[in-house]
Image 1 (cartoon, helix red, strand yellow):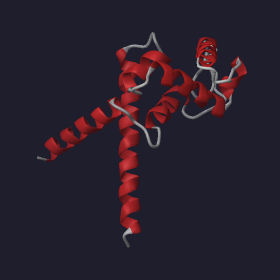
Image 2 (cartoon, helix red, strand yellow):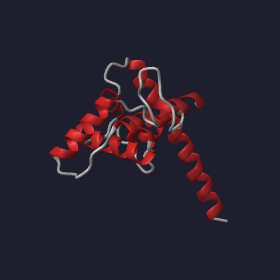
Image 3 (cartoon, helix red, strand yellow):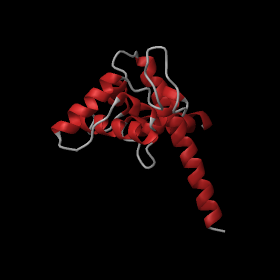
Length: 146
């Protein structure tokens, strides 16, 4: 019975992770953890850098979208090392190409050549964050009721 409950819970969490993981943005947090372990100064051997491992092509895409939508923003390569600008680039690109904000689509946008293992890694990180978030809320509710 316990295994069945755990499997059902895992299935629900998997579905939530695949659908929309917002408030807080667990999908974004999962990508940051996978890409850089929250290290804003990291640059990999291919030259991708910052908390979201942004490269020139993502900068160019964010600039193209920003211009098309008249957002009035533009970015340069060094902006990838700025946490706030990296997150802004993420949202510009994801909002444009991933309006339903799904995990699978986010993976394809952010790392188009990655295998399904990358998607599973991100999805599992979202599930882990969801579980942590649920536990934190349970504790908050418990202590607020006392």
